[in-house]
Length: 541
Image: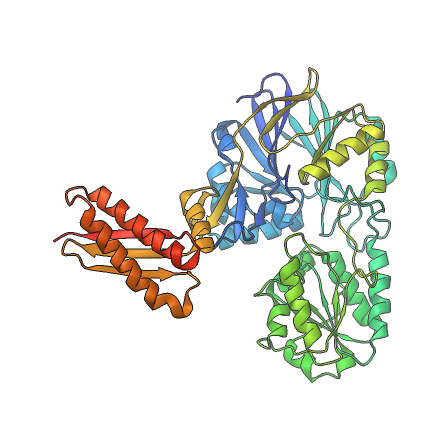
């Protein structure tokens, strides 16, 4: 699919889901990729941690791919870079903070010297074939969140990335209303826009509000040890917590390697320069309880993060009855159970838990309806293309855009080919899209046989059968709910398999294997109600 004299858009990830963002723009025979993210696996993929967009379409077009422009450094926008950038073979473009984090990923993967990483320092327009690209700073929950203003022969695209409006950002200087209005005055063909918080009727709020909320909350707990858990990538929140520690006379302690890495990266890029001197966990534990403020990873219930290790007693930092944990983060959908487990452990130990439902200690990094409506009014695009959301989010943003006076809203999802210009805008085709998983060290199809079989085994267990031509049969089972009935089941299954084999034709190996499989499975179903996977090994003389 080589773009002609036209302007195309195609999402391979992030449209129909929150996370795994991969967006393509096509024009005059060339493609430009915006972001290369991943998402974290859930129970849908047993044994898998990371999930990626299937890039087969653009891999087949790699000779026409000009580069990958990264909007910001969240994992759902850069997490797939170390797995695919070398094979795609094109330069990466990023602002300094994002570039440092990407470089660390490439170095860890051992490919830093094989991937070209171009740092965009001055935010001036740079040209990639028919695309002129300029970063436009917007507020978000990480340093250097950016939109992209993409100039093409057919009109300008404003690709928001992740964003919000914030009158009191603690880090960076986002574009002002006047600057965004000036962009709109020059004409915007298409607004490709984050849909995550479209159902929120209120604006997301500012980091300044969070500072005041955290300051008030920490002051409430004088004499108690206070731990705050937040997203490591939220550099503005780290700055806020440093200011809160200083204001309340507490020493600041950081627990979590990702927090250490983010502080180092932020300071190397000119942020967090006035962060208070940090104390190590051992020193923190020697301080009076009311003299320390701890910042820890693990607010999403991650089992290997600092907060989980603190709650199970395997971390140098200890919390005692009456201490306080502030959850300065939102619950990511899908993490409710593991967050609940952590919070239950804390509650059982007599720890006071405070979340953003009780106190204004967190704001989202994505725009609510008032912010979306404001941006529509400033940019005045001809076309709205909702992205970065589930189907319901994107459909709702399309409705909101049309109600706000945007002439055309295009609903699309992963794999849809959309023509933005010069003809009537809309979907005109589809390309391959889907999911890949990192399974051990192998990138494999998410719907491949290994994952499907693993899912079946997880639900129903597995039975193994070994038999020889002399009639000797061995049966074993894993994952069947039999307990004390297990020995009796094994004996009956062995008899059933032996009887089935005695009736099968000895020359028909496949028939004998199938007879053994069915006999073992029927026995398992009688005893357990489950229909396990059955493996059969026929031993020859």
